[in-house]
Length: 196
Image 1 (cartoon, rainbow, N blue to C red):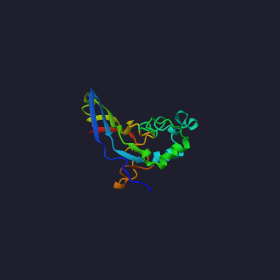
Image 2 (cartoon, rainbow, N blue to C red):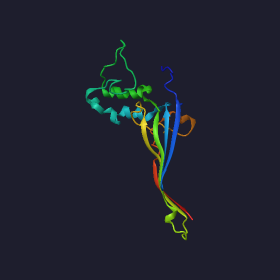
Image 3 (tube, one colour):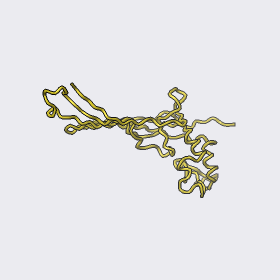
Image 4 (cartoon, rainbow, N blue to C red):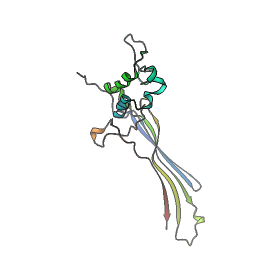
């Protein structure tokens, strides 16, 4: 019989954003960073990915041939000790070690901390002096824009590199639960602004 226990807390310790805009002559640049510290989530992708051996870390550093030591080869962010209190050095067969991700759900609870480049833009504005006074066009600019551009950093417990903002669904039942979700879409586009 399983004993219920708290495995994590979905609420982040804190969140922050940083938006910066720069202008130099006719060029403008803007970036927005998003940072989250803390907030745990359960990753079904990590649980099944480890169990089936599809992730890179299930074969890294020869663990399939040489075996796995918990705390040294995998789950290095956690402390594993033997019964006598000494540091764990017991070598386990990789099939047993990675199947434990399925049977021991706490191995798939991930710290949701991240740093992302959320948005950026680079805009070039044609100077008014280059536009004829008799022209129908009064102002013209062209921009390269991006949204959800890159994940710059993830907590070391996120060994599968799952996006912490992915979830099962948009309802309350999906909070703190990632289940084989698609990554949020990155979009990069060109924007033209014309003033008549």
